[in-house]
Amino acid sequence: MSPRPIIAPSILAADFARLGEEVRAVQAAGADWLHIDVMDGHFVPNITLGPDIVRALKPHATVPMDVHLMIAPADPFLEAFVEAGADIVSVHPESGPHLNRTLKRIRLLGARAGVVFNPSTSPAVIEWMMDEVDLILVMSINPGFGGQSFMHSQLAKIETLRRMIEASGRDIVLEVDGGVTAETARLCVDAGATALVAGTAVFRGGPQAYAANIAALRG
Image 1 (cartoon, rainbow, N blue to C red):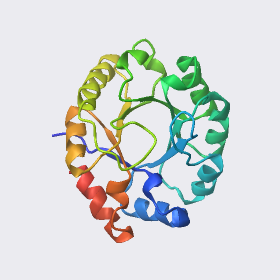
Image 2 (spheres, helix red, strand yellow):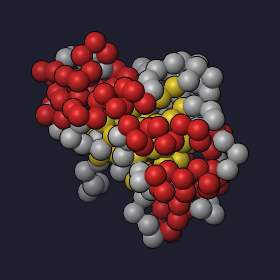
Image 3 (tube, rainbow, N blue to C red):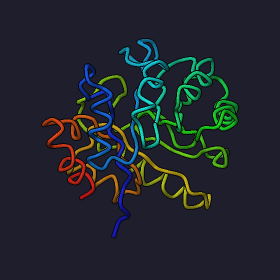
Image 4 (cartoon, rainbow, N blue to C red):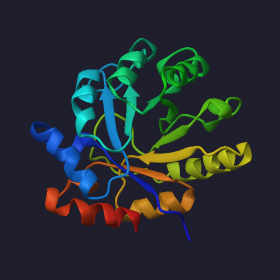
């Protein structure tokens, strides 16, 4: 039997006029983490949130804040996001010249460090630095917008990364983001994922539906 996955609702799909209320509602509905997508309109074709939003949400958050930086360069902003309240900060290898140095800096600031894989990014990027990684995030869509369809090609990558984690002997979270639904969630967990990011699949139907939506993702 597969382990119970961590569910991290993406606030990108929440009602932005009521973010504090939305955070409290998904937590009450059983969310394990809160996923925050940061986009700069340069590294990805959209602009979303900055450190001030993370800081504003922190008093409402009783679960870890999982911050995904889709920005380049990422290094100049690490301190601002950790100071604002990020518990996990994940970066793309393509967002700076020295991934190892970036991960070390995130940890030094007091957060857990994650690496994000775009659909075309090879798992080999972290082969020689698994000791610096606390979380691996596999994008099963091209990052930039919510509501896209799940890319089944990424299941093989999840399986490969699961084998790398097992070989490392480390307790690294393997997270998947993009097109996660009740149906694709099971495929991800069966492939080795231990955490699932979902936006539309959680926030669809309003607060009265959040508990059922989260339960459906857990299977």
